[in-house]
Amino acid sequence: MAQAGSSQPTSATTTTTTTTTETASEPAKKLSNTARDRLSHRRTPFGNYHQYYSHRAQVTPDARLSLLPRSLFSNQRILDLGCNAGKLTLESLTYLGATKAIGIDIDPFLIEQARSAEAEIRRENPTEQGLNVEWRCQDFMAPDFQFEKSDADTILLLSITKWLHLNHGDAALRRLFKALYEALPSGAEENGHGGVLVVEPQEKSNYQSAARKNKDLKPMFKTLEMWPPFIAELESVGFRLEDTIERKEGGFSRPLMVWRK
Image (cartoon, rainbow, N blue to C red):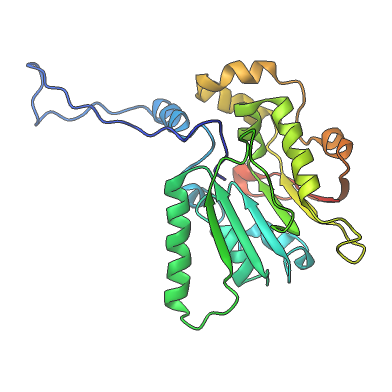
């Protein structure tokens, strides 16, 4: 999933140089797999991978959505934070019966991909009803960002906490948890059932790997004192853990944790 950060995602710049020792016919030096991996991580410091879903199980709807209770989506408003190219955002509408979905990502390229995916669905299904979706290119970790209470009954925070944590630190992640709790409807507003936050936390070893591959993340990594799955931190702002769904998916075997307001 793509993440929010304190600045816009970095993009690679191409510099053309001319030397007297090389010719255009000479092949470019190939990067090792390790060097290529590190370069990719430097270019996507917020986890904003442009081919993210090509590395996950190729199923529709996404396997994570299939494991979650249908009631979290059917006739609900969905807020997908770090939506990447919008796959889950759109599937919550087309497969799970959400009434509205909002996808937020910091990367403008990914938001354009999401809009293209939406347009493709509309082309294939010109009479499609209920595709009520909104895309926002925003940094929801910015100090002045405010979540609207009318935006969501269910908030998705999937494979994103690591990137938010490594870019912003403990205090910022705690503030996010509090802001999401306050943005969700209470039980009094939802017939006795408060809103839901679904978290797919990456494990600590995943943090270590990211900091090793991207040296820019190391300083923040060294300051961190709280670690996933953030049970104490989420409970401290008022959430109640309703369910933990263990799952296996190659290198993405992470639990889905359902937190109820």
